[in-house]
Image 1 (cartoon, rainbow, N blue to C red):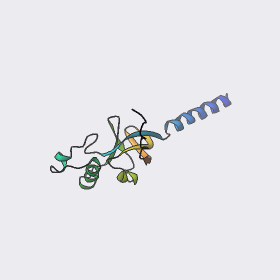
Image 2: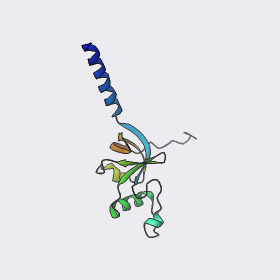
Image 3: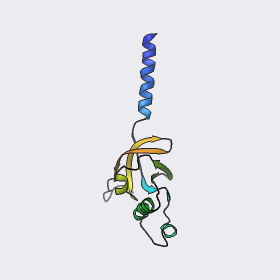
Image 4: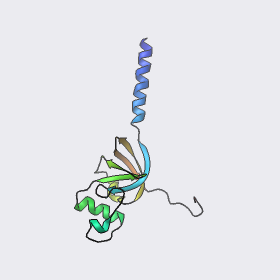
Length: 121
């Protein structure tokens, strides 16, 4: 009986650890004001901006937070001080982190590999 209890406890601990593991998603680094869609002419006095410039301006000038947009869903970023957020603002990236609810704690951000001619479509 004692061995069975230990085995169950170990199995439960393993399941908890597995659910907290980092995962990777592909999506875009945006800001909490714009979310999935940038409307730069309305937000920045009719000034057209790239998604990157809009994201950086919203974070700097309007105290917006970085968010991650993947498959049309907007996720909060738990660690706003992660350096690569600013570096990749407005870019489509592969983001790795741990999700809890609708918040991702980022551990890694990389640009996806460029497709070679003849690949894909």
